[in-house]
Every structure is written in C-alpha cells, then in structure tokens.
Amino acid sequence: MPNIALELGKQSASFGVKSAYGDAVDVDGVSVTPVALAVTGFAGGEVEGQGDGGTGGGVAIPLGVYVRREEGLRFEPNLIVLLCVAVPFVWVAGRALSRVIRALKK
Image: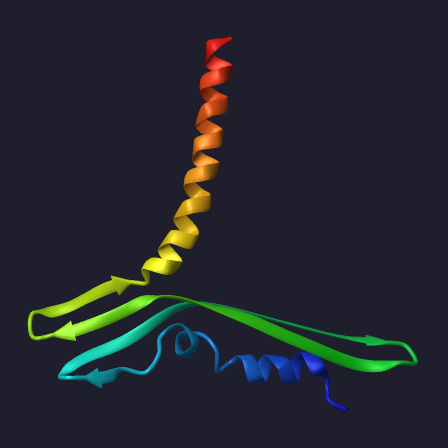
C-alpha cells in the first residue's frame, strides 16, 4: 500500500477556496455566493505488525453570503452564527472586565 500521508496530501489539494466559497447561484436576477469558514484535518500512521491507516475530518461554519445586485456587491452575514460567536465572547469579556475592576479596587 502506498504511503498514506502522500495519498492524503494529494486528496487535500482540492480543498481550500472551493470549501470556503460556494458556487454562485442566480436567484431572481440576484447573484448569491455562500461563504463559510472551513477547517479540515487529516492524520495517518503505521503500527509495526498492525499495518497502516488514516483518518480525516472537517467542519464548515456558514458565515454569510455575497450578494451582487445592480447597486454593487455586498456581504450579508449569517445572524445565527454571529450570535453564537458573540454571546460567549461578550460573556468572557464581561468576566475579564469585572475581574480587572475588582483587582483595581484593591
């Protein structure tokens, strides 16, 4: 069997921009291009006497879409993903700020 790391490298060459930007779709005269944050990972190895193997995985988070109209190009974010990121960020920032204020009072 060929080297599993080389095979994974060849297959992962097609990832990248294609996984972050989708194909443009025309809807009622408006061109829409989806945008996502895509992360992929692969691992491979060999154990003496056991053989070799590999695995891979990934995740794609939809960030929003680029909308092209007569007026021009505009990015429209995915509000649900924005809320999922903003709520924990605001909570952590609030906790940190309260600890800084408490430390400055002492």
